[in-house]
Image (tube, rainbow, N blue to C red; front, top):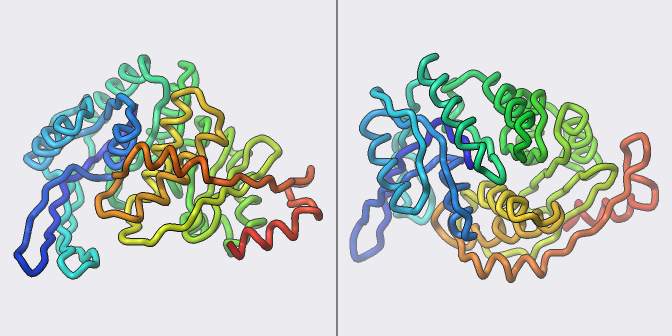
Length: 323
């Protein structure tokens, strides 16, 4: 199950010498994650607030993709964007923020989320579209706490104050990128030891395990008192948008199916790597992802009792930073 408070309607212009096409899709972090979960043959329920005309279109598009939608339906302005990709690059023409959730709408969405989570193997908490305050950060703390109390496996892909709130409630796995850690001030550089130290800090704040993704460098996983780097074959990049969401969704799919966290992260790394080879956020080929995951290499990086890389692993750290 995915908590996706504010899905958006995406309008994309594409074309070549033969003409221009216009494409309508449902989008937003939770939607892109749901799409990858469906690619990996998972049954997905998405809990969301759908607003106005844009929200009604989004619901139809999601249901066409085989995603079970449980929603608060309300009037107002729904989130949407218009992008032009005719040049080969993604250019934003218009980006519209959705209306904030009222207290009544938020209460209803919260109740729907708890109800649907009772039958879920795993709950993925995603953020709203854009930086606007669609809902209070404390909702993530409350959800994480209540879901944990109900025995649900909780994974979060959040940043900044939303991540801090979720950690305060307690989560099984937190996924964050190196750029998000930099932006929040959690690190001043993206060296392996700095990122591992930041991951250990997130663990102390309420995450059982932490994954740090790095564009162009191996992903880092901190689980218990062990850190590992995750190496995946590098693919030619067409569009990197949505790779992080594909990563998170594939990890969630694997965990929901009972696999180990290391195996789950290997599948996530494969999904993220293949996502960049194609247009379409959260898309991929399930068989290709599973086959590539077998070529993912996981290397241990020891941590001493002070939360630092052990001397024997300093050389390995340098290799990871260069990879």
